[in-house]
Length: 188
Image 1 (tube, rainbow, N blue to C red):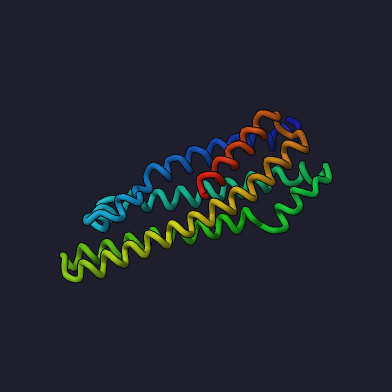
Image 2: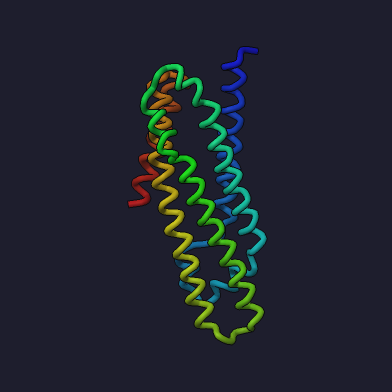
């Protein structure tokens, strides 16, 4: 089998795995702004700790797939002397996004630990736990926001490079650019 075809199939499989693991991760995350403001926020986190841990793991897996995709496609784009992809890799937006996203995931794990302590204390110091829970939640939101910006910049450059290099059908590159635009719009 031709090396480019094999690489293309691996990249397609990684895209599918990234989308599936990322989607499942989002569904299991179990956190929302309205939930963070409720009285039972830490109790909810405690009750859904396993789902949140699986969500963190799947989020890290999805990020790893994304880095793998970029690494596999990079040689093909580089052959076409595309300067935009060089800028993309030079600045390391993808790795930066993964690092920030990982930090946000660790914040969620800290929230689980806080919820366990809150349940163990049985209501004493409830206000302190609530405040700390909100702070961990906000920390996660800020990390998530920064990761989305890093993703949008890096992925936008990546999809535009794929568009210029004509390595994949143009409709897929355009779809990726539209998706990045939607992500950027959601962060504003």
